[in-house]
Length: 309
Image (tube, rainbow, N blue to C red):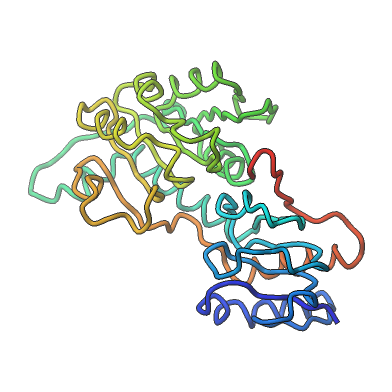
């Protein structure tokens, strides 16, 4: 019997219990799944960082901690965590991100707000450029960034991608390093942020990056709030240099009611919905990793502690 501890808030247990049991059965895994175990009896931990578990020291036989979320910034620095840590990469999360990013990119590209918000009897003649004439830059070429890039390329957008390490991906102009970042943002008619939240990525979009962007560019951030210097972005929006920012993530969530983003006419706030882990598909990823652990195979989606993701 494999003992699996579900360490997350009660509402997550209510959502995940049945999909997890189904996924374990599909893998022919004999699992005892509970929200409480003696720590020394636990083989795997299914984990959400906003739960009550913060000390991993007592879990002496635990083979892996399996994160329910893509982001691991709230757990990767935990000094008691000696077990392998896997982040969540699943089809549902990726597809949800692709749909959200594609939808908002097309919204800005086509100028939909002029028609959706402008129902005042004025006949507005606006013909957008074709996708081939609207340059998109994606900062972050991990699983989510790459999936979004492929979808946008399929619609005809020229896509530049920037990553901290060098990559060579067919159909994408790949850049890296500080000089590459400056070049990447300088051609971004639409800038999409899908970097992880680390000390190295905080304020990637600062006043210099914003100044380097083309006049009238759009910013879409479904990645992490600290990627953007908020004060610098507000100044760029006020001046009109940045035409609009669609923001799904923030340094403080929920976004405080008095934050200037709420009332700014050039900002769209969405409540961290760009991509949510889907219990059915995420449970299959967790079950597959437990199967791998029991079979002595490498775990999927292991976190690089040094890089922070």
